[in-house]
Length: 133
Image 1: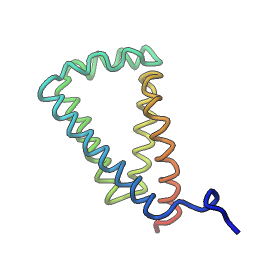
Image 2: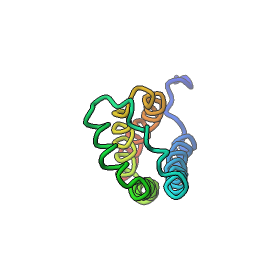
Image 3: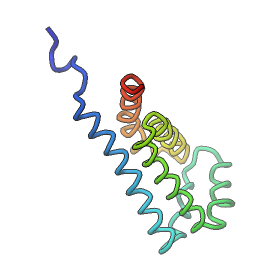
Image 4: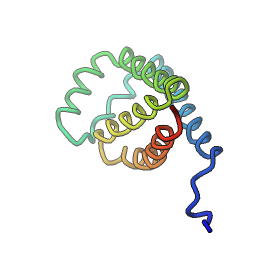
């Protein structure tokens, strides 16, 4: 006899996680559009705690050279991830995981967000790969 602790999560839980990530990335895109158009220099300190100097330097020299353009590109990337989660779920989860792993390079503070997000994204990706054809 199986106990509730050993049973697989229900389809409802997987749907909630899936739509949670989809909504999160779509909303994130909206936030980046708003910031890009109103306060693009709010991104200035984003890479200050990066683990590698080259990440900080690249952020300052590339992203901050044209923050509005790059923030809009970031928004487009997040919309693309949201669309992939809807239309190509497996690829969507691979990009969600890659996005969070890359975000972790920006410093320990981002780990507070990324570790819990990955704790949901990795099992959801595994579930997606096991159940979709």
